[in-house]
Structure formats: C-alpha cells, structure tokens
Length: 96
Image (cartoon, rainbow, N blue to C red; front, side, top):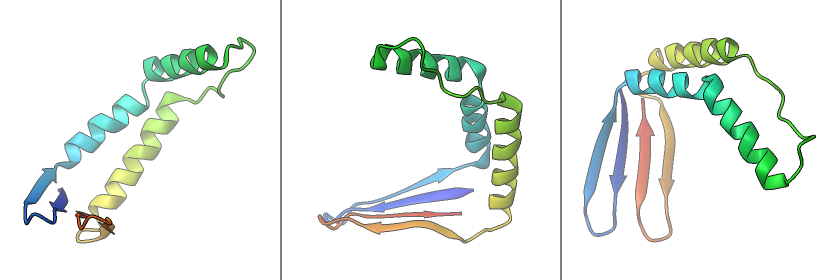
C-alpha cells in the first residue's frame, strides 16, 4: 500500500492510503487503445495539422511494462518516493 501524507502549515494533516490495485487500474487506463486514439486526435486538433501523428505504441507492451514496475515497487516497502516542502510550509511525502 502506498501512503500519501500531506501536512499544511495550519497544522492539518492528511494521510491517504493508495492500494496497489488502484495503480493496476491506472496502468490499464494508460495502456488502453482508446486513450491513445484520443491523445492522437487531440494533438492533431491542437497543432492544426493532419500529417502529424504520435508513434503507435503497443498497448500490451505498455501494460506489461507498467505491471513489472508495480510488482517491483511492491518489493521496495518503506521507500520514500517524494518528500517535498513547499514555500508556504506544506509538506508532501509519498512512501511505499
């Protein structure tokens, strides 16, 4: 389980647990063909050119890669991924 801890300068603390199943769902969304088609259409519309296209990526390769990354992250329990303090005193920490 990944935990996201947010501490504000007004002494408010938030702890948000994120199960690994959410990461698997997110990786499924990133590897969907529908999403890549929509991104391609959005880029073409924004640039105003039809000759430009992003390189087609195989959805199964993306999904397999993200699955391997998530399983490796599961083995690194306690690892701090992000530890940031903003100028207004807000602290954000993401830990596996």
